[in-house]
Length: 100
Image (cartoon, rainbow, N blue to C red; front, side, top):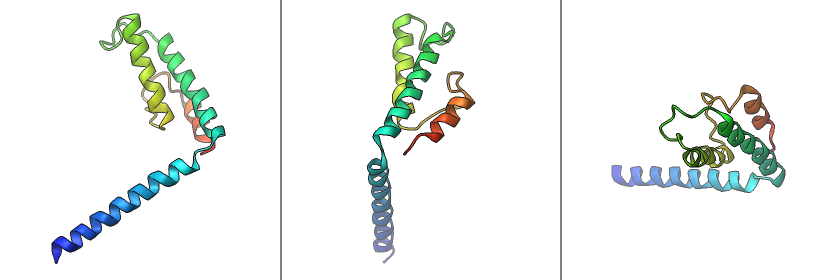
């Protein structure tokens, strides 16, 4: 009985997770994407302007470009890390104002 109950709980949890992901994707709007894209491009530009000479992942210009470009995808998927200088509190506040 315990395994059936556990299996049922896992199935319900997975169903809820899938439902949340689908509803989030369905709610994304072009205006929200444009808003986030503008902010995320600014974050990448800020990263490119930052002094990365001590960063072992971004010592050369090519490494820096790759390193900074990685922040665009994270930003667009709403993964903003506040401990990085190119994500200012003002940028975070603007990001939260974007339509879903």
